[in-house]
Image (tube, rainbow, N blue to C red):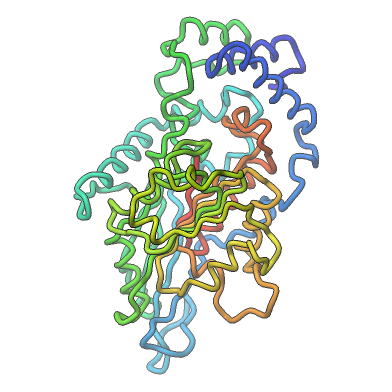
Length: 432
């Protein structure tokens, strides 16, 4: 739907925003989104002014091989037989679930500027059994402390990283990830299963949904900013992979790099820094070093308000913007390079609401092109275990909420980016 180009479209826009804000704020939000649409019409080059992630070459099924610390030499190819002189090592391959592959194949047709994301939500509602399995499994990971009793998970629903021996081809472990489907957020963030179903663009249908739909609440969907869909790595899962690929003497350290740190108990999408500290601590992975950047100027007392004592002694907080210049003083990848070893556990969050810098940082990570000097042989992706990134793009059911904060690219590019990050061995999550 070309919102704002017709009276019907304008009414739909106002109805959408009126559910989230007071009337005056609804007009402001609608005006902002309409202005963005006029400046960035569908299929225009203006929608992708920076790194076009649709051009990323996917390496589906290609292993990221790791030679174990006790062996040397070349690892045989996937179709080669091992000989006595070959070195054996660990192969890490990303396996996208059938559900994820179906979405990746069809996201071009399902992405839309329709503020109700009708085509995408129709597809999500046809898979409510998969969604239920996803959310139930998530809950099983969050209870039980350091040793949760995990429910079985279905490979048709969940994607995963597969660890196998490069010589024997024996699968040693499978570590699940939330599937890349829908808006790449909580499955009910936009496509609430309890909402009145309205897949047409008729104004009467929209009005009916607003006034007599099953959900009459004011304010956003309770799942709009929910983080209860991502599968952060558990300590047992990390140590299993670590022990397979590193010598026992190489004890891992734990790092968290927060790009867009805000304050401990506050953030644009809800508390962020506290979520990471508390979530990973509950999973048995307490960060020993935390490095944060925040462009918004804050008073020191505000920055450190509410921080626990152990974080105060482990955090380095830079109240300045990150930069994307290769090897730059405030390029976060330089800090990762200088501080981290491959055996360490490293989490990165990128959410600075600056598409130009975010796109360039993603390009540097994907292309291993983050250094001004010659490569030392270690790829940047090999130093990062998990990455969280809120990618503001066109064609998403969340696009209206990003109006005014910058959008670049589309859902096809977003799917491609996250899939390739996972192909490189990174547990890449779409952040809120």
